[in-house]
Length: 586
Image (cartoon, rainbow, N blue to C red; front, side, top):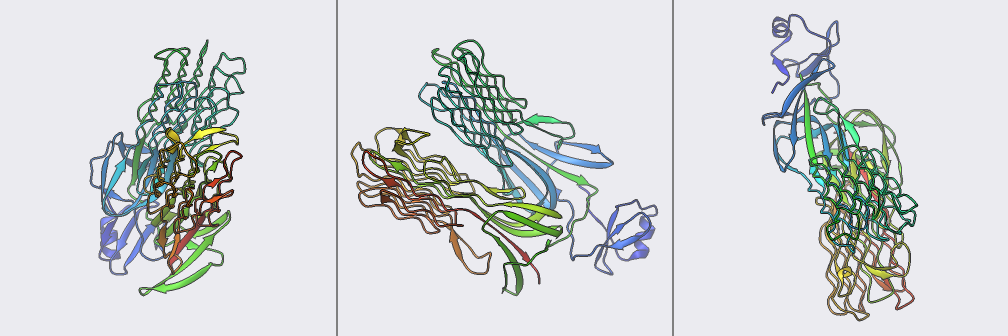
C-alpha cells in the first residue's frame, strides 16, 4: 500500500517531484507540515496533525480506477479480520443478514444496509462479523427467524426482521412482511431499511418484507396474491453497481406469491416453499405458501462487508471543529474537551472535518402490559460509544430516539450521521391490547425485553444487538399469576431471570464520562412478580401492579412491566435516548 511521501525539506521535495499534479500531497519534516499542491504551488494544510487513508496489510480482493482515483477493496462474505498497519480512513459497506420468511405467509425483511465514507480505522487487527440469514419458519405458528447483524469497527448492518404469521410483526434492519389477517406493519431501522408491508386483513396471503430502498408491498386484498418485497439499494464500492438488501416476497396459499425485491430478495411461494434470499446480499427470504406439508418460509440471505481505500491517499485533518455553543467543557488528564449534548433531535454543524468521540443511546423499550400471569421488563435502547469517529464538514442530522409507549414493538433508534443505536425491545406478556391480543415473548432490540411468565414460548426473552446491548431475563415457567417475569436487558448486563414470585431485575446500564463526570445509561426495566423487579441502574423503570414505572428520559432505560389480572395492566414507557459529541480542544 502507498502512503504520503516524506521529504527533509522543499529542495528534496522539488527534486523528487518534478511535475506535481493538483491535489498531490507530501510531508516536510523540516517544518513538520503536511503540504498539498493546489495546481500552481505547494501550501501547508492547517488544523494540526493530519491523517491519510488507512494502510491495510491484507491482500485486497480487487483494485479499480474511477474518476482518476485508484481504489483497493476488501470483500468479506464470511467472518474474519482485517489488519490495519497504519491508521487512517476508509469507506465501508455493512449489510446485515436478511430475515427468514414465515410459513403463513409474510416475507422476510432485508438486512440493514449502511454505507459510510471516510470512517476512521485505528492501527490494529479488527474483527469482521458477517450476519447469517434468518431461518425460514417450518410451522404455521412461528415467525421467520430474524437475520443476524453484521458489524465492523462500530458500524452495524442490523439483521432483517423475520416474516410474520397471523397478526404478529417483526422489526429489523428492514421489517418483515405481515402475516395473514394483520393490518400492522413492522418498522425498519431509520437510515438502514424500510418497513414491511401490511396484509389488508386477507387470511391466506402475506405481505412483502421491507428492502433497503423501498417498503414492502401490502398483500392483495383478494386472498390470491402475496405482496412484493421492497427493492434494495445499489452501491459501487467494489467498482461496479451491485444491488443488495431486497425484501422477501409474501407467500400465498393459492395462486401467486409476491416477487422478491431487487437485491437478493426471495420470491414468495404459492402453496409451495418460499425462495431463499441470495447469499451475501442480505436479501429477505420469501414467505411460504401455507398449508402444504413442505410449504416452508425461505431462509434469509447472509450479509456482507466491503472496505475500500483510495490511493494515493487524500489527507484529512485531525480533530473536528464544531460551530455553535458547546454544552460544556472540562479538563482531564492534561487534555481539554468541549462537548455537545442532544436530548432532542437537532443538527450539528461541523466546520472542519476530523475526529470526535460520540455516544449514541437509542430509545428504551416498553414494559409488557400483562393481563394473565406476568409482564416482562422493557429492554434498554442500544448503547454505542465510539472514539475517534470521523465527522465530515457539513450539517449533520442528530436524531434522538423516543422511548416506546406501551404495546409498541421497540423504542426508536437514535443516530448521528451514520452512527446508530437501535431501540430496546418490548417486554413479553399476555395482553388484551392490539397489536398482539394474546401471548408474546420478549422482543429483540438494542437490549431485549424480558420474558413473560408461562409454560409456552412467551417466557422467552428477546435478544440484544451484539456490541450495543444484552438479552432480557427468562420468565418463570408457570401457569399461575404472580410468578416472576424476566427483567429487560441492559447495556452492560443481561436482564435478571424471574425466580418463583419475584420479578427479574433489569440489566445494568453502562457508565460513560464523556461529559466529564460518570453517568450510567441504558438500564433495563424490571419484570413483574408478586415482588416486582427493580429497574437496572442507568434509568430502568421498576415493575408495578397496574402501571409499570417509565424509563428515565434521555437514558434509553427500559420501562417496567405492568400487570392487572384479567383486565390488563400497562407497561411503563421506555426512556428517550441521547447523543453526546466530544472534541479535544487542547
